[in-house]
Structure formats: structure tokens, C-alpha cells
Image (cartoon, rainbow, N blue to C red; front, side):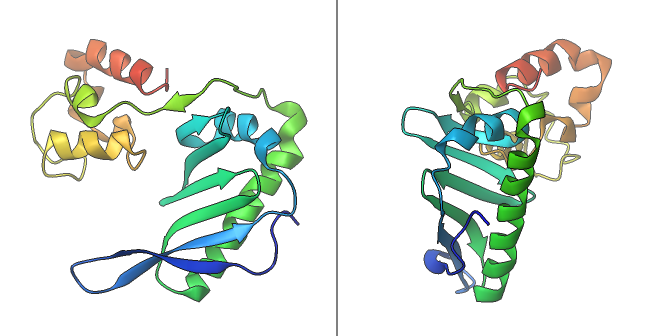
Length: 174
């Protein structure tokens, strides 16, 4: 068991639909900093600063921030959903601990590039095949780790091979 059994919800945002979203905040039972380079090696990392230390990564459709003695999971609608996500994150981290001996840690800091830098490498067709209305909207999702570049269908064609390779390098997915 890595986490304390109790956790709290903190208000994260209230949307235009007047439905408030929350983040789960749970304390850890041990220092998570030594685990961060292993998470950096296997997770969809949005941000990693080993000096701080803090790592932000995506688990399914949620953003998870891990500090030495605290985990934050965004966004949940209620306490029951918070409990489910607390368990999912704990299982994910326990699996990394279990596999640690077979993983190669990545100690390098990571920051996803800004949306405009990503946008320059996209086809700019605004075709919507990625699920977004515009390439700029898609670039924004890429810059926060909410999408993967392979969702852009035109980018996967031979015509955009060089742009695809440059984007994969920029995103650290080469």
C-alpha cells in the first residue's frame, strides 16, 4: 500500500454548465521521488522536474501530479469517482514498483513543447479526423498530453513523413 486510505477532494474548476469538478489529493506513505525516473520511462509524461521533484503524467484520460509525499488526480465529479481513481493510480504505481528491476529509469527533465511550436509541424488541413475542429486545437491537446500525434491521419501519410518524424522527436516519442 502506497497511499493513505483517506483522501480529500479540492475544487478544481466550475464549468459553464455549473458542474464543479474536483481533484483528488492523497498523501503517500513513503517518498515517491525515487520512483519518478521510472514513471518518466513508462508513462505519458507531460512534465518532469527531478530537481523539484515533481512529475505530471497522463493515466488514461486523467492528469496525475506526483510529488514526494502527495498525489493529485484531476478531474473527478464526486467522492466515489475519486475513490476509483485513487485506486487506479495506486495500482499503476505499484506495478511500476513491481517492475522496477526490469525498467531503465529516465532522469532527464521533460516538458512538452508549446502548442504553437507543435502546430508548425502539423499539416494545417483542419480536417477534423483527429477529433478536433482545427489543427491548432489538436496542437493544444498535444501540448498538454491529452492527445497523441498518431491521431492526426494526414500526418501518417508519406507526404508528411518528415514533419511526422520531427514532431515525434519534438514530443520525445521517437
